[in-house]
Length: 361
Image (cartoon, rainbow, N blue to C red; front, side):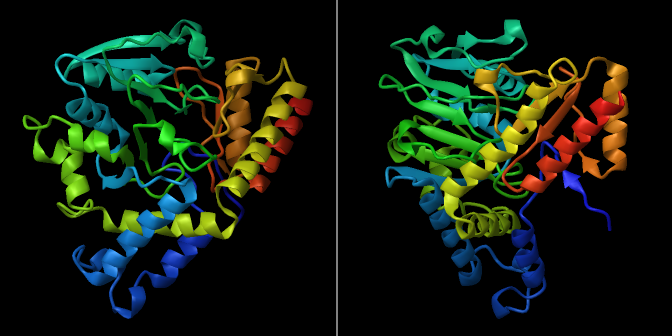
């Protein structure tokens, strides 16, 4: 069949080698005569998958022994509530930096549970940038400071993270986890839905400092909303999304095979450069939503001179095998989500299509 260029925002492209490995083992995993989906989550065969996936993630992200890796369900949206349930005590404040729709949803959920405050926001500019760290205001009474590291709708991304000593830094990294090197030690807690860079939908990875989990006052919190439930039971308190964790492991094996985060980050920078240069060199026809200093390496958002041209471009793109290029309704235009598994060839093909379309119009 004709090639398909998958720029979906999520669920997103998965590495072909990971899918092919899963396909090969789909009906008979590890000579068990069963699919990994059919194995008991208490079996030794599945336990090997579970442990290897954790160890690979720890190795690739250089996660220190001070942090615990948890596999949870419910997506990042559940973390919007789970986080304050565990960390936001009655005499503390949850600080939120607003950089898009997902951080708005996160603070809304937390406000049902405890006191919150907006430390900084770029909403007034329709989230075209990340706030300057000099303009982020904290309090001595902060329970944590929450950021969204990458904003899929608006195409912005944090380039530097706050250095905090007074409270844990918490990050929703759903759309850029494992896409670049970072110092995990800086963060009290990281959470990420898997469906953009890590694997299929259904798994949420939480990386949390053990001391935060241990010190959480959760006697009033339902069992399945406590981080300690997952920590004490190795994320096996109830049946985890076993196939999702298995496929997450396959994706991590692929990342390791291509040279780890260093090589992946180089590839992501090159993919983004190809498209951003096309936007900049054709300024006036293609216009980026994000300010240059805040541009995301994962989601490239841009508009054309008018809605009619945008529709024509998207129609042509669909005919040529491009999938998922429609921009979010809040800003319109186009969005190319170029997560880890999107190959450079797809970005080059998009560049060529953009140039061709401009020349024809």
